[in-house]
Image (cartoon, rainbow, N blue to C red; front, top):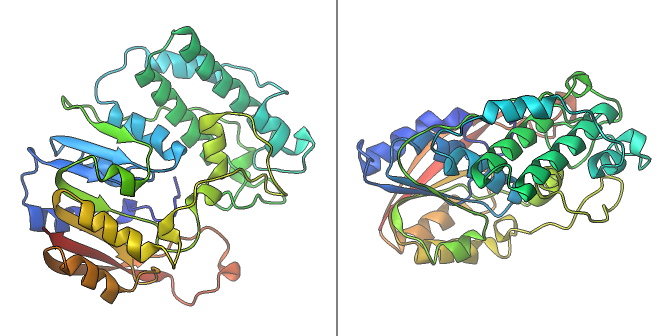
Length: 333
């Protein structure tokens, strides 16, 4: 997924810093990715550590990570279920089609009509299989994760769901095809949560805590509201032109709340090594991060130039450079 703040292109840098500080052999370490997003970092370390604890406040993120992190053994027959989903015909009375497709009558065009109908049919079938006991929780989240990612590939947006495009773009015209969200297998159990990071941190402990909170005031619950709608698939009344739903607001997107929340998180963390990814455009100044982290142990910082996230056309962007500086702030408690 082309995801705001994704660390996909920075994973080698992150890996090198974590191993430089915590050592190359992480086999006995508990690694926590507490603002997991799409789970890129946790997925990278999954087979290198003893346990990954993955968390995010957004439910679509939980669904992704419940598959990529939570599933760690073979699920027999999963490809047969993917094939069965792809053979389904779309339905016309489903929530995605009626609320988020042009043919549904609400003037929203997040998906083509055919793809919206197919998303509804697939989502209902996955839930039905779970309700009747035909599939277990592992297979349920494997299929749900596969649907979310496959639907995202044919969404008629400029990467985020704050708005839809007026005309169907090329990728949105392609028929929805569910592809398997393959996960890494290993012998270790992992934990996946859907909670506020500042509350969860009080109940967990480990060796390495990786922090990748939001950098700015744009709330992920608004930017990716439709992924939550597909993941939860519970009725509500969409609001406004964009069909927004009620969403959780993160203190890390608030200039008035972020510093207190960040210090509380650092203070409460029962982890020896803490790594914070944050760029030079974040709402917490670098000197404030240093001041807070230095209170609780030995502090150091590393940096690297990074390609800016791009979700729209170049002529619509209001910045003059395509790069930012990514910092990894490190605390050894």
